[in-house]
Image 1 (tube, rainbow, N blue to C red):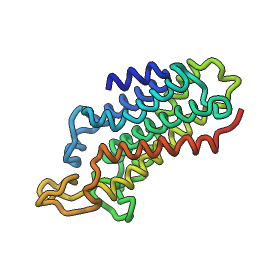
Image 2: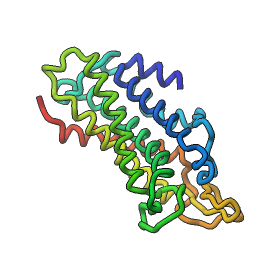
Image 3: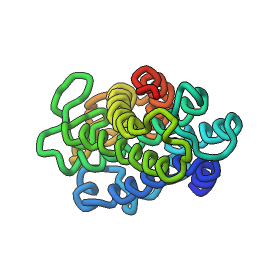
Image 4: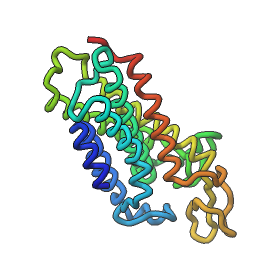
Length: 255
């Protein structure tokens, strides 16, 4: 985690502020309403600790992009402007997308699981499923993912306002917030689709909880045991990192 933070800080303060908001909000939300989460999540860890695999899956893509950004542009802040800084702007939006995607997914699962009044539905079949099923979505969860991505976008945008010098002659920067929100929502939807199809979910009759591994007492709900949660998170952030800059390039106001 420290290495990820150090590389992103050296590369660009906006990268660091986005990472900071993601990690702080994620760990706080994981601990929030922990007593309820312990009853519905068989793999809930108190304190929201992140092991090295989780850090790699959430921070690996942004770290690689930050290194590429420094090779291309050198360390320092730039306005996102496709007409003047095409490649660097592309990398900045890829990094923003990866972090906003991770934040959106975490906010969706941590808030949606305890705040939603309606039963979650599986994204592929729209059937009602137990809370904690991989690939299950709720309206509260989707809204939370949008807000999670937006929080990362706001952090990036505010840091741009503070540290970038030539904003008045650049393309407008406010779309950063919009695309942060879009990355959070789209990332959560992709994550849910991968979770519903490539992650095993079963209902354990003894504990009354959803489990991610097949046991003799578990009844299959959805998905094949191909990926685990960390792999799903990694694939989602890679997809958003590839897709978001193209969307932004198409819709970004020029000058």
